[in-house]
Length: 511
Image (cartoon, rainbow, N blue to C red):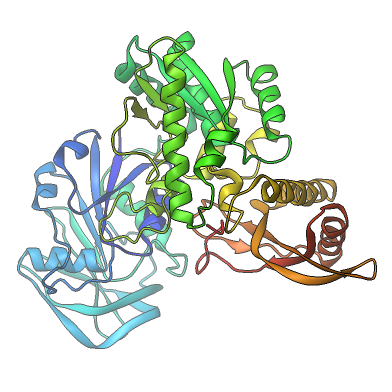
């Protein structure tokens, strides 16, 4: 992969923002943990390193370290916050705990010309978030700006192309943040803004051809845009050596299997086989309520299903799936110091030993990037803009036990909700919307009789990449219609509530 910027992750809440800012400037970026293998790095044509911020102090005994191997690549390095302090400490500068921490907005004054700060106003507003501070620079390093608290805000070793900023250029509160990151990419690293959907597709096809050769690939389809994009790319790369499998695990949305198969066969001309494995999955999930156990069971049963299916087909060596970047991040797949939010069935839910070798062509993309790729592949906009649907399906939207009755209740409620959004023109204004079945019952009155039935929660969010999200404020009249129809049309439901939690602190899905 040409022109790749490697981001070394030290556990900052902003690390993913760095990657996104770089990609928005049409440059490829990848996040790796600080204890990366050099073999992994050599998979890319590295043009520069960025060291992220993080919660540690460089003098903590267990502090994440700066891998000296990055200097062997002879490319520019930019340290941000903790990453800046690591650079300074590595070259024998001095970092100390500050009695006056800086959090939030701050003004910096640029006092020296710098390629990193080129065309930035002499005084500009930035976002600070640090307790430690740099007080003494190593030899041949120069201060390029200071904050209004007289703290070193940026410095550089121009000869070696090493740069550091104490603030966070990746957050929108840093007014000139995009410009600063752009300066690092284009003026310091000298990369070209040539990473786009078309180039990604061509590069991915070449990688797949090189990896797979004449062997055969089994492609797992979920009905969502991610796995569909993977299937189309694979078909372009390998032709008839790709067989697509769509497994109905019994926890799809109402009419999902029929609608998806119709689209695959008639619109995309994909060779797809449908397998009904509902009993296998539901039996395995009987009496399971823990969400992590649900995801791991589903992940294992998917692999078991695929491996059993291959016994009845020609020999396959590879399994392809639509794993996304957020799936890996939330599963704690990159940085050891990052907290695991949840095990995605296609990441943390997979068994350790598999007969099939995994291919994940889009595992470095965010959802919006996948949609751009899908459009480049001429997949219909109606399908590209479908709301995300989790691989484990309704299993992670049914809190508590999974039963056929509870699945039916949620399918019906969700079907009504989504159709109302489409009828009112709000479906395409919302990033993701769905219904959740809660593990409680409440007292109600219907037809002058007491009821004791289930509760449905409605969830609507807007997001760009799934890493953060804000709840969507649907007009009350439409919410009223949703509630009325669900309660009156779905047997077993007597109450509808609304989730107005953003991410963070919540997640988009409930489990």
